[in-house]
Amino acid sequence: MSIFLFLKYIKESKSIKIESKLQDIEIELRDGNKILAQAKSAQDYSIAKDKKEKFKDAIISLAKYQKETNQMIYISNIPDMLESAGGAFNNNIVSYDSCLSATKKEIDDIFETVYASLSKRIDKENDNKKKAKLLTIQQSVKSFDKTKLHFSVVYPFFGDENNRYQAIGDSIITFLVDVIKLGRDDAISIKQRLLEHWQLKFQHNSTEPDKGTQKAIGKEEFAWPIAVYLIEGSNIDIDDCLTFTPDNAFKKEVDRKLSSTEMLFHERFEFSNVVIQDYSSFKKQQPLGTKDVERLFVKQCGSKYYKEFFCENMDEEMCEYMTKIYIYRIILNYINVNKISSGIGVMI
Image (cartoon, rainbow, N blue to C red):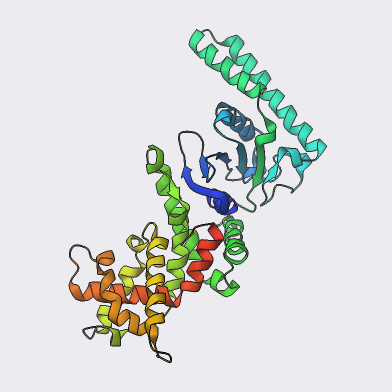
């Protein structure tokens, strides 16, 4: 669900946190405002006794922090939580103000039920501190600004893995094609790897302590794997750009390293921009009609970027090959890198 939301807001966003101090999902926008979301799901919502109970819990949680945000979202996998809404929320984000009158009334009734339930708990509570806390929560529910409230249902999201993540996969394809402007074949080819990478990234983020910006996943870090997976699709041979002759085993080891998680560097849009700008200047300096300018650039200028890739326990030949094949792929793929940066609102 967090992937679905971040893709929807990534253009105007700055970063995302999962299980933050404030909510299940916290998206910081570029203007400094936040989107706070309560995410609720059910293994089998068809047999749930009261499909509105999760929403009631979400109201209390969101009410506590409504002053911290200008937009709140209740997102779930329960498509018929509000009977009057029909399928209006399915794979959409709908504001309270945009709901039909019958749906607004159903929402208002649920808020009144939550308020009444808190009144009963307050009457039964003997501990003054707990009673005061409940009174504060009740007042927050009463003053809840519903104009900030939005609803979304990720559907379908149940059963086996293919069915459960179908809607998320579809949203990734839509994002890559409509926002990033990739060809549909390219989008389909990297969709599954992106889904798996983002799932692992968000799962890890949810277990980290929230220490301000340390927990936040920036949108550059989030989106860079798109470029990496597209670059990996460039099957090229750079043997004539090297100072040595690599064998097949060596090449396979480099491919393994380049495909590993640790190669998904943070803020690599900045590095790509440096490479692309250097290449553009180099190209302008070459005589008219010079062939294979890309390979010539890699051969003559590749050593400039060794420090970007060198690490402990890496020999010079490994560093040279890894650097040169990576920057060559960037040059060949710079159009897509520009599409990604433009699509998510990052300047390179």
